Amino acid sequence: MLRNGLEPWHLLIVAIVIILLFGSKKLPEAARALGNSLRILKTEAKAMKDDAVTTVQPLRKSWNHSGENDVQPGDGHS
Figure 1 (spheres, rainbow, N blue to C red):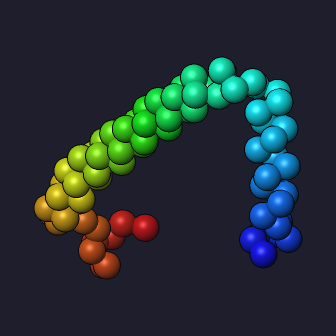
Figure 2: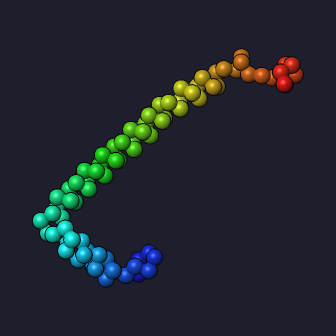
Figure 3: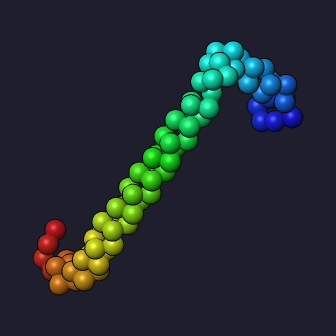
């Protein structure tokens, strides 16, 4: 038994319906397009993650080195 009560024969029925809807000639093209879309999504997600890391690192360094601007208790600031 698969998750959420799905049985293997459920997947077989879904596959048959997909073949009937799209036809056997369109399926390879659709699978190729889906693969390309997933590849693009993966590269964009990696680029966003890398961009976030390169943005956060300088902020952490500047935050750690800005000790002279820190307000200390008893400085008269409220």
